[in-house]
Image: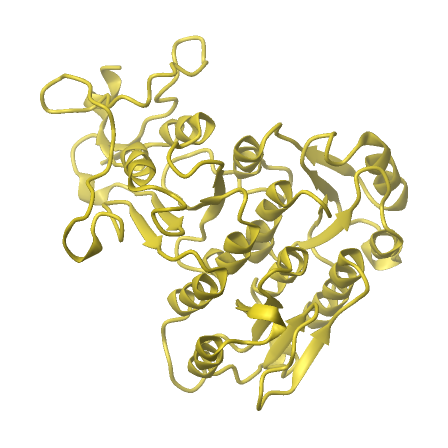
Length: 389
């Protein structure tokens, strides 16, 4: 029988014990520092562990190709995806906005284009994915978002604008046309703080909610126009990030223009990512507060890595984004969260549920030691062993 044991890594008062860096589970009963083995055969354990899989590399373009092919591995007539979205490899704002096109029913994964033009490897990946269009894409095979050159041999549906807010408004209009209606929610993020904006991309790829942009104190006209549209009058608005990123002044403008406004905060990027992973309000938010889920772990200071992997969140384990701010150290807030939802079992581990984490980037970006700590935190464990702490 599977059993879920909550609040591991917290003391009786509910606060963190702060000792998760040491292994609590071992055959000798002695704690030891959690670290990863180095330089194993065939690239292991960096390539994969019991509960993690690494998309290695330090080029977001390559990471986007790997993610798209991992998300859509099958070939043949009618095999998904029906369309592909192309974004410039340095334009994180367009990438975050474009993520809602990755969500079903459109299902158009993102490929990144260096200097706005697909690389040879990207063109090869597009040919392998072989998008043929569908009624859900209005027969479009390729969407381009932002300043991107159309790939050779494809007619494209282009979405562009003079600013990030205008491009996001264009994506909102395109998706509304494709799905014949408004989104379930609008997610408003900072134009200038990618570390607080990128969690919206992963959620948009999962949900189809539309991402819009704001400056700290002033909401751009393009964003307000979307919210004021009568077809969107009942769509709730969620603001991501603390008040020093999106101020209360901007929130008041959003509230005046549209429906209800609610903030999902967090003083730093790792904390903010956990806040959204835990959050739930109506249909909005991951609400991952029980064991047995998928996650991606990416660097907070590399927004294009997050954009590159949004396709992973459209199928498979539907992973939610967790952000780390260090190559070597897993943030305590991330480790505490993973321990809090650690899966367990009483008698039969094969009937239990499991968690899985994609590690995004090579070992220079996220070390094997950090990967090992993630693996240990989400490893299925006997309830009796867990109960001893």
